[in-house]
Image 1 (cartoon, rainbow, N blue to C red):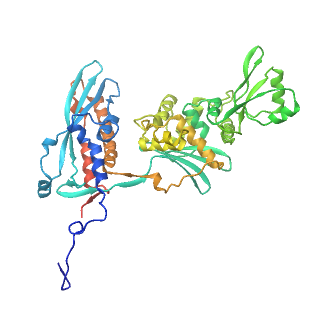
Image 2: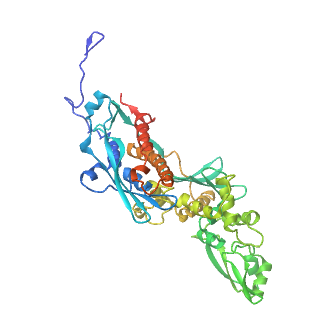
Image 3: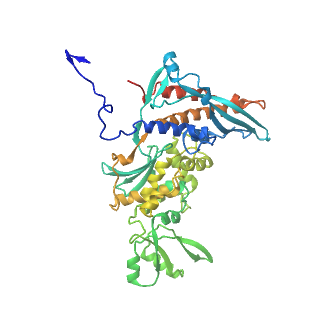
Length: 479
């Protein structure tokens, strides 16, 4: 090689000179990710793909597809990748401007309510294959899909501009946030960053429908014996009741004081007259209890805003109406539907997914076992549970009262890498959702002579694959 009249000898590291250390497999992440997505090794061995990830997980999360009238169902039976039917080699694809890909065929069964079943293997489009260099050949050009760093699913606690908040970030689904109003000393919930909802009202909507049930999640109880003693009355003044208090009134047992209400001296006298000798109070001190009255403050707001006259607790309608007026403003609210839809937003696999990473983060944040037990805790449950929501609210209040610390949202421990297989899986999930909607629409129109291929439209899937590899920001030409 000659530069400016001088001869320069190029030395290739690794030929005459030995490397100090062995280079890591820099494309291993890409190769492993795409192999995990297609699961070709399992297909070659004749094994069924693992349903917890990759293309198989996309199919499993979409199917079965039921018709609106319940008379038909499309069931998924499995997919095959025909590696023996690759039309062009890598070299031929580059020369002829073709894509290095392989056809995917899926076995779909159409099942009728009368027991009849029609099965068909359907072509679902061509899926690009990865070369051993971690690249793809699309329309004759070699391309690479860049990995993406994003905020890890899980739960984050922060304090920004003196506002204490927590965010439950899912892999897929609605964001759930909790926020503390410092001036009013209340906790609120926000769904998908919309208008905030009183925290205890949201707890009622997900199943904790009484004051007693809510108090049991945050506080421990202290049992106290009542007596006509001035010092005792003074010590119990302004303490909160943990359980409802019942007494005989006119020959029948009635609730005389609610859980969460504050106890006063004259009420103690009334209880003694009604032969009540023992009450359970909220313990705001000691271990195993929340050292804040924030939840109890929320009950006062419930009384003022959401509890109808003649009721001592908000009804289902009182709870769900304000929540859905925020989620779907201007729409008529059917209580039965709202009662079903709200839990589905966070507790259903079809609409919500924390991912194994998100579940691991929850286990690690709220685990009560040893560090080793938390590391080995199951990550199979990838939806939220009501207890996750209680734990998040409890932890946020403890952050507010300086018993726990906020998280560093910029720390790399709170971020993760999405590689090619995961990125493609997410793109396909949106396409499969469109395919599902089309299938349901066609089920309404078709007659009894319909076949599986008449209901399935592969256009959204083919378009999603083409867009992902051909024009998405993360698909780049190799220089």
